[in-house]
Amino acid sequence: MRDLESVCWSEARIELRQWRVVEEGEGCGAKDHQLPLGSYPQTLGTFEIANIIYFSYSIREAEEAEDMGSVKAVALITGDSKVRGSLHFVQDASGPTQVKGRITGLSPGLHGFHIHALGDTSNGCNSTGPHFNPLKKDHGAPSDKERHAGDLGNVAAGPDGVAEVSLKDWQIPLSGPHSILGRAVVVHADPDDLGKGGHELSKTTGNAGARVGCGIIGLKSSV
View 1 (cartoon, rainbow, N blue to C red):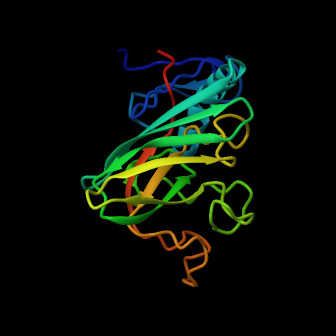
View 2 (tube, rainbow, N blue to C red):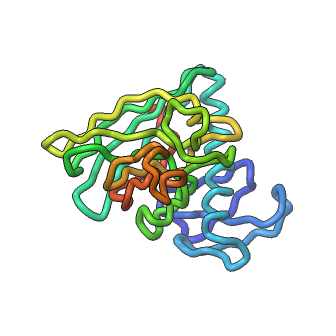
């Protein structure tokens, strides 16, 4: 693999853990900033670079997949401890997004489960930003009208520390302006109080505690 690459916005490519190109301006005539893999420019923040480049790829690919009837994505969950898992996302045409998978290594009980705004794990799960909340609402339960788009409630881990995930949600599309592609799914140490616990963090995080596992949501291979 070459150390340096540059491409037009319309053909931008990204590999997880390796940002491969940064451009400033529009189109192929823009000024290119060629950087070694793994480095970042000084003119833009890391979060902006990650989202701009990723979305220029993922949104176009998602639109192509949507034309064929469905969009599929995957997130591989890792954490500082033994937390591991894989989650699969499917959205058919204009329907809700289905999320299915398994997370292991959790303590028994309920764990807050959310989509966070940033697909940045450079500082582990702590750099994934706040809950995905494009409509600027208060935190709530998945069934509430007043909720973050990324509020997915809780997952329940059994005595063996395994949580089986199976849910559908209309507010986490895989295409369109509020797509969750390139963002992160996060599992927390404690239960989400669904905005009703009366804690000072209830209306922002559900007082769900530390982030024990996370993964970037990426478009799934068709093969």
